[in-house]
Image (cartoon, rainbow, N blue to C red; front, side):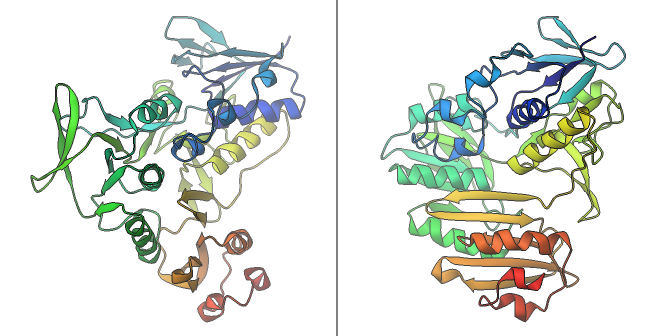
Length: 405
């Protein structure tokens, strides 16, 4: 009897699961259930080239439409799964239709964190997570319009950069005292604050949000914590995302800042796997469980789960990495810097090409590379081995990081 694999979710991780299964000549039937009306697509370009109008929606797809024209694959879009029943080995969608499985992969992704403030439901207040979100924002973008971005993380600053280049007046409101404070050092924050100011973005840091003002159902301004108001024709909110774990929790699967999986991407239910933004997984390099919001994590966990489903022994043990494009600046991050106790600057920020190296107890745990792909690439092996290197030597840009291996 042919085995049936059901994948709940149709994002980047889900697309990679299907791709790896086909590469490994998986013999079973593959059922893909996606809530959006789109086949699996890439999210990073949404806040960059797609928002700028430089990329058509078709170019976002993880694989071309023809890839799914396969009798082995059964795709159901516009399908929201409401129930997972591990006992009956099936999932049920919002219409009551059931899909039985022998093995199940949860690629549930994440959702934007919404602001519970007055005026949050006004027209013109946007979040950015999917194709439809960006299409709605693009309809309102126009040179000279006043955009307020709430949140100075990756998404907020990428939106600010794109919209400033499109001629909008851009103000960024951030509660923290510096941009990207959750993930980078003060040195990196300072660099980006200078860059955005240079491009004409107004940064309002250490500034809380009180709500949104409006007229006739449409946003006209943003009210900040001191009671003053910033005029706005449109608003984009980027204050983080939350993992979609409720479906798994209701099915009895363990969750802890994500669906708990092992290094094989397997839950406590042997035939249920989980991949991508929604998972909490062990990381041997840092000796703790982590949840990652990145394409690299989605792709590699998907490959790991698919390999194990096919009977291969695969374990997810990699250095996390991320990137952000703002103006002509590429930030590439290797590792996780949380808990660092020393920062080493390699290169000169004034030259627009440098790296920030994070140490903990003398060991290299992460690197932020600005327009410095060589340092980014060569740092990964050092981070994986928690290499202990003299900080003065690390700061010497004339010595390649690979020479410290």
